[in-house]
Image (cartoon, rainbow, N blue to C red; front, side, top):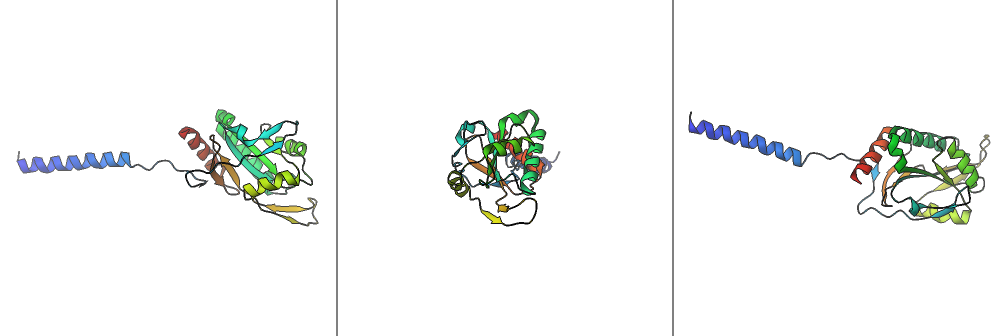
Length: 202
């Protein structure tokens, strides 16, 4: 056989092998679908509020779990019930993995929401959800720390006063860092994907 042909064949084979190796090494890793915070991930600002049963909830006590943190109110006509229903679907789709996830719903309407009312409300969606409220003095610093805006609007509807508010879900990772946020009505499948990916990485 012609030596030149052997060299050419060998060269082509080597290129194919190198291309395959490079393709494996630099293969695109699975990526998050939510909005990712820049690394190093900022630590989620700790806060403490009294739960419906009188015990204290502290965010930092949730270390080791993924926390899905959302702000809203029980008289909300649309955004809050929709988001909580989606959070229920997220846990349902996670199956056994849902034990590693905690949904926390914090009020932006302390005039009408007690922690007892918040807890009763969230349990309509899932009994594991935690609903929290407090005084305006307790809640305002938390809203500020999480960049929650709220605007009170008078309404003639049965819902009474409407509160327009930030409608993002914040994902706090098991290390207690702000890892991701999800815009209102992010597909449930995307949130499930990101939680599963995060737990795999941890």
